Length: 99
Image (cartoon, rainbow, N blue to C red; front, side, top):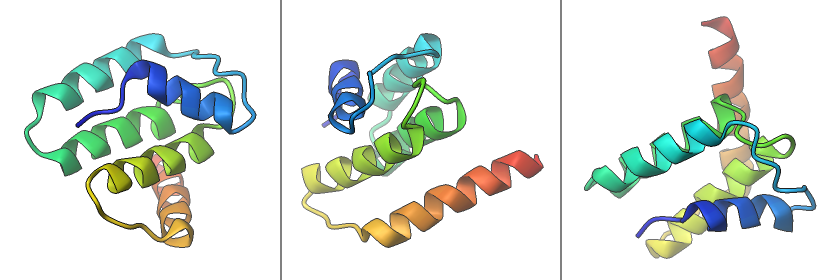
């Protein structure tokens, strides 16, 4: 199971953003790469990195990433802690800035 490009853009719009994709190539690449993986966790990591680090959207990348993660977990009958997910995303951003 994989979220489509349209679904990911819709998530951004549902968060009150405009759904404006400013890094279309990165989103397409991430979706295609995620589709090739047989590991759902690796696929999620690919999408998470693309949205969060590559700044796919004009606005709302962190919130979109959090909702994509929560949606993905629901699709696999798992539950996530919103606070821990948010903390993890902030940590990822801080770590990426040091590189």
